[in-house]
Image (cartoon, rainbow, N blue to C red):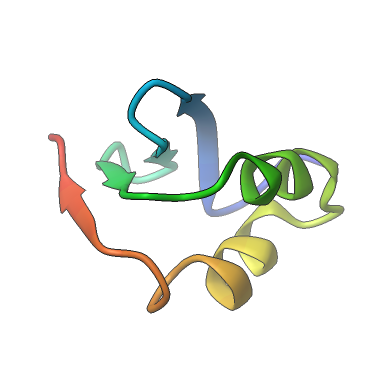
Length: 65
């Protein structure tokens, strides 16, 4: 199901970084995210809901652009 919040996301395993591009165009890196969290997000019915419940507020982040 296409997300109304998340446009695209990817994982950088060498740095344990989850990179999320929002529909707004902003890109954020969530830091020290375990691989299993990324795998769970890939399987989640709603990417935005998963992000809000399991990533935001639990991992440090930085805005990329």
